[in-house]
Amino acid sequence: MHAIPGQINYIDFMTPGILAQSVLFVSIFSGIAIIWERDLGLIHKLLATPTPRAAIVLGKAISAGLRTLPITVIIFILAVVLGVHIEWNPLNLFGVLIMVMLGSIFFSTFSLIIACLVKTRERFMGIGQLLTMPLFFASNAIYPIEIMPDWLKVIASINPLTYMVDALRTLMIGNSSAFSLPFDFGILLIVSTLFVIIGGLLYSRVIT
Image (cartoon, rainbow, N blue to C red; front, side, top):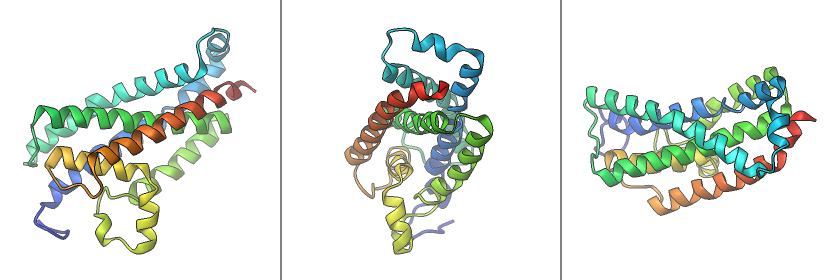
C-alpha cells in the first residue's frame, strides 16, 4: 500500500507518527497534575523548599517521559504484529527512547506552562484539547512535508512534533531524514530546555 511518493509502505510510514501522536496526547495533559497539587496544598510545600523551580519542572517532565516508555513498547509490539519493517539496531532503539523522552519533556512542560497561566482544570482541558489535533495534523506524522501546500510547510517547519516524527521515522524504519538526525535532536533539546526554563519561571504563578 503506497499512498505516498516513493516505495515506502504507508503503514511503515505511519508507525513513527502514531508513536509521536501517543507521546503528544499523553504528555499534553500531564500539566493538570500541578492544578491538583495546588488544590491539595502540595505546591506550597514544594515552593517552601530551596529546590530550584526549573529542577522541579524538569523532574515532572522526566516523570512524564518515563510514563510514555510503556506506550513505546506497546507501539513496537503492534508494529511487529502488523509486519512493520522496524530497524532493530540497538543504537536506533536507544535513539528512539531518547527522542521519545525529549518529545515528552517538551510537550509536558508546554502543558505545565499552560496550567500555570490558566490555573483552572476546565480552561486547561479546553486548551489542551484545542491544541492536540492542530499540532498533530500540522506535522509530518501522516503525510510527508514534500506533498504539503506551501502554507502548511511553513507551519510544519515551526512545529516541534515535525522534528520528533522525522527522527523517529529515520530511527525506526530507516527512512531518509527530511532534515538530519542531529538537527532533529538539536531542535527538541533546545525547545525543551527553553520551555523548562520558562516553566520554572512561571511555576510559582499557579498559586497566585
